[in-house]
Length: 370
Figure 1: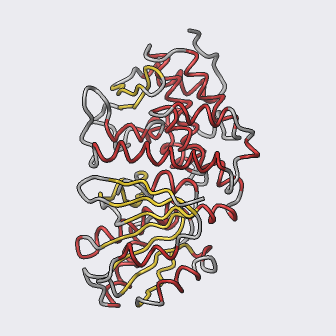
Figure 2: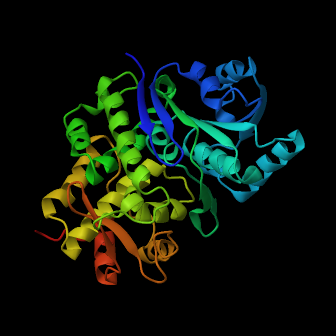
C-alpha cells in the first residue's frame, strides 16, 4: 500500500506521512542545509534506532541523545542535560533535532528543539500508536513538574512527521491498546466513524498490519490536524466550539490520575478513564444523554481499556484537577459533549456533580438514569 500524506496547512506547513519503512524520507524533510542532527530517543530503543541513525549518518553529523524511558524523561532536569550536550557540541540554528520514540520522547525532544536558541527545526518519528495520533502532531511540547503534567512547555510545530506503522509490530499489546484511548477519544469529539470501526472490529484484529488500524490512525490524525490548523495556540474556536481545547477531552481527570499514580498508568488508559468520568459529569449537568454517556464505557471496554478507577480519593484528584492548564482561577473547566461530535465547555460544575461522577467511576454509586 502506498504512503498516505496528510498536509498540515497552518502558519508553518508540514506533512504527516503514514506508511511503512519511511526512514529514507527523513533527509529530504530535514532539508539540504542541515548538517548536524541530534536524535532524541529512549534508552530502551537504543537498538531499534540504529537503522535510522545509519540513514542520517550517510549525509549528516549525528549526535545521539539517549534519554530515560517514558515519563521519567519529561523533567526539566533531563531537558537541561540535553541543552548541555547541544551546547558542548556547538549546536546552531542551522542544525536540527529528530525525535524517535513514544509520546514522552516526542514531548521532551520537541521542547528541547523549541527552546534551544529559541527554536530549531524538529522532525518527529513516533514509534507508538499514542505518539502517532497525539504527541507528534500539532506542535505542543513540554515537560512535567512536581505540580502536574505538561505545565511547562511551548508551541513548536515540526518540519514533518513520519508515522511508520512497521514500528507498531514490536509494540507490546498493552501499549497498542493504550494508544486506542486517544483514537476513541477522537471518535467521540469529531469523527463517529472511528467509533463504528472500533465497535465493529474484533479487538484481536487490530494489529500493526491491519487495514482497519491504519484507517483509525489516519482518521485520528486528521481530526487533530483539523483542530490545530484552526486553533494552534488554544485561543478558542468559532461559534462556541472549544477549539484546540477539545483535544483535551477527558484529560483533566486523566492527568490527575496519572499524577496520583506517579505516571505508572499509561496515558491512553488514563484518557479512557477521564472520558468515562467527564461523560458522566456531562450527563449529570444535563448536557449529554444517558445513551451517549454509556457508550463511552462500552467503546473503551471493547478494546480492553479500563473504565473504572478507585486508586485514590476524590479529594486528591480534585486538588490535582485544580492545577490543570484548563482551569481558570479557582474554576474548573471541562470539555464535554452535547451529543456525538458536538463538544462544548462546562465551566464551574458543582462539587456535588464532580464527586458523584467520581463515585460512578469508582463503582461506588449508581449511575444517574436518563
